[in-house]
Image 1 (cartoon, rainbow, N blue to C red):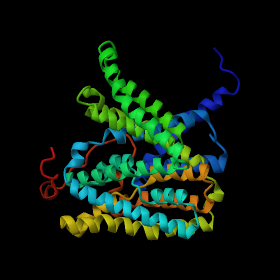
Image 2 (cartoon, rainbow, N blue to C red):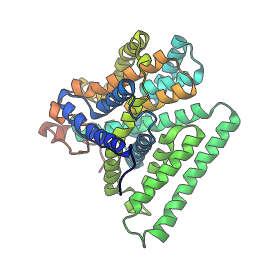
Image 3 (cartoon, helix red, strand yellow):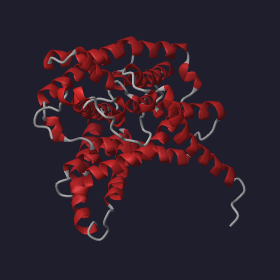
Length: 409
């Protein structure tokens, strides 16, 4: 059957895009550029330079699947048993983080004369590590098992609090809206286990190996529910992942290592479209001299503070050596996904001034580059969202000296 006139070139556009997103970022890894950064840059070039794919529904759909699968993966990777180990240190870390968030919100409000709600969101964008992104990058950072435990635990704990703050901040326009949203979210959390049980009893026996498709479908539905509430896709997808993890005793396949790996691979394929789509929404006027100054200011102030809060706390409480504490602090710097999401919300919902929006983008792109350069990894080993999750061999002296906290399997 002969294709309609005009369809073939569009198909070729998508083929070129697929090739570019999955080949070019790998080529640039040798220069220590994370593929996510390359994808954002490619989106900005396509949108600002050539007007390609702007508002394209196919790219938007693929980007939605990317952000949903990314936060589903992050939720599935939340293991509350792990979080209970060394919970005293983790709680202290969260308290310090909340105090830093409050201080940052005051500083942002005073500096930019913003209302409280956008000021809190800017503070979240500056301070919240992107858990899914960081978890996927851990194999390429060459950290030990003990460092991996702490980075994961601290990132997950921080993101749980950040999502709660994001939800309350966006829904706090009126008491009625906040109450309604809490009820809807609470009802969703209560209904998810019921849906999982029904699926396990009535569908799995007759449709084996359908767990992944069902989990992804539920995550997409819940993501759109939270989007309708005004808190974006990530909250719904993350909640589904967390509930599925808690449900693994009743349906082990729902949150097994195999499911986690399948979700990670799915996210690996679609997340580049999310970063590309984020780049498509950038405009040249977002990056004037004022935005550059704001971005540099964010970097100069926020990066040292974030590193010192993590490393200083660990040195004080755990008596860790300076270099080990710094490695954990530096590894938690990337905020890419969380900042991109919040910056978009601030621009679209709160009409954030362009120079602050541009400053946030400059800040997050820069802080995402820091771990790969500062930890001095071989360029060939620098890999984020490229489809591989191989764990680098750990030095023999670290395998014993930096063990996982006692009792952790």
